[in-house]
Amino acid sequence: MTEYSRASDLQLARELADMADAISMDRFRSVDLVVTVKPDMTPVSDADRAVETALRAAIADSRAGDSVRGEEFGVEQGAAGNSHRQWIIDPIDGTKNYVRGVPIWATLISLAIDGVPVVGVVSAPALGTRWWGATGQGAFVDERLGTAQSGSDTVSRARRIHVSRVAELADASISLSGLTRWENAGKLPQFLALTREVWRTRDYGDMWPYMMVAEGLLEVSGEYDLQVYDMAALVPIVQEAGGTFTSVDGKDGPWHGSALATNGLLHDRVIAALAESL
Image 1 (cartoon, rainbow, N blue to C red):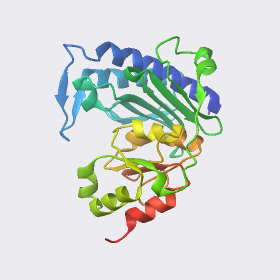
Image 2 (tube, rainbow, N blue to C red; image 1 turned 45 degrees about the vertical axis):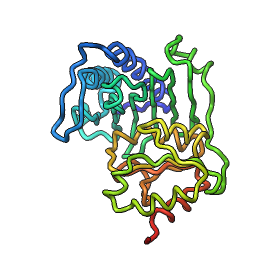
Image 3 (cartoon, helix red, strand yellow; image 1 turned 120 degrees about the vertical axis):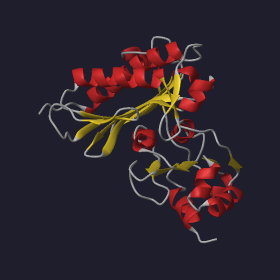
Image 4 (cartoon, rainbow, N blue to C red; image 1 turned 30 degrees about the vertical axis):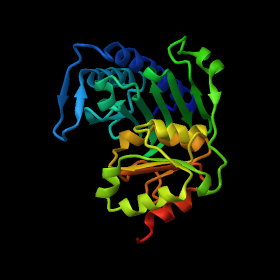
């Protein structure tokens, strides 16, 4: 079995993001964008499917033994069978924004080894920004996406990021997304109680608040009713920036249907606040 370095896997993930950006931006705000409704009543565009199809083909060419899990086409196994290396893709995270022309959306690309995300890229070309991280490699942001993005030039222009050092809830800025989802989870009273303890509450939506946590612009982000492809790419970036990423009830990883990302200093207190009986 071929072994790849973390750096080479990260480089591939960034190259995949270049490919995805070219496809998604070409279709963004297009008058002939085709949008249909999936069985779960969420929208999907021709751009979602085109991005995932292209990334799957590129991964098959570059990492033939790896498996792929994507939002639009599920799980396919690589030539090596049930590979312990799996690429997890959300071709367009924020499709509802994408189809309305709102620029807050991104392609999420992750590599998980034995179920643990070790590489993550979040590329938001309509915002001109890309974030990435890999275990042992740090976390970075490039806010000039689209100007000679690929290759070593990206590294030279990237900025390393780190979570904030805010240590008190009263000083924290948080983004807990999807009020109805918190209500459906039976956590609306805890949600509201937490918002009264912190300095500021906003709902930025989708991948963006998690990247704000990684950059130190927010202290807490979280939501319910998520799939692994919504979260896997976020995990290495938040962790390599010094933060903590779990489910809302504290389980490690992106496999438990909810997300809670913090600067680490506030993580246990937020979990406790959201678990309280009110």
